[in-house]
Length: 294
Image (cartoon, rainbow, N blue to C red):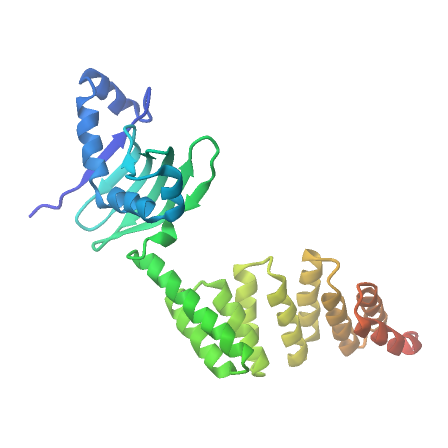
């Protein structure tokens, strides 16, 4: 049996896609009506509208029933094995109107939503509905990862670092590029004194989120524990690039400089830490001052 594939382009007003608009004008709108009926009956739209109807906030603002408006915009391309959708679907209820923005991809089993955003009329704000689709495998995976990492954080808080590491590893098997998974596992490994393993995970976390300061601070501490003074200095310097007022970074870098025997830089960093309110910085500066000139 031949594979079935269909692509439709819909326009609004003078037309998002000119070819269809001209055809629609020539046919008195009959072609558009047929295509619209087909589009709004597709699971990608039906499930999206059901997500709106299931959302308490949306229903409170739109009322019930929630129905699809007339002018649908965008494209749908479907086949037996896959497809894509990029649609703007007006929805309305007795109390208000909104626009439903849909971006989704289809495999052989189901549609998977990248965007499902409900934008209310007249600047009324928006609701992200992707998380409402409990049958969406992508949402299920995200929910599972969140649950595993929440449990890992709790285990780490109890001092059960082995369990925390195992839970993070399970989460990362589901979502290999999850920043939180690497950050949590790196901290748990550091607390378990697996500094080499912590270094790998914390570097990955920093790569995934270059602006995350806590992971970089912990990475600096791990480099210190490993005795790599240059890497330690680099890690804390990157924190200071992000936040020049981080007393922990000034103090951490001062410790690294002291380890290298560069006492002038160590004293300067300790003083900065002291200025940022860290008593340990003040104590370190006082301790090193007599030997700075040696």
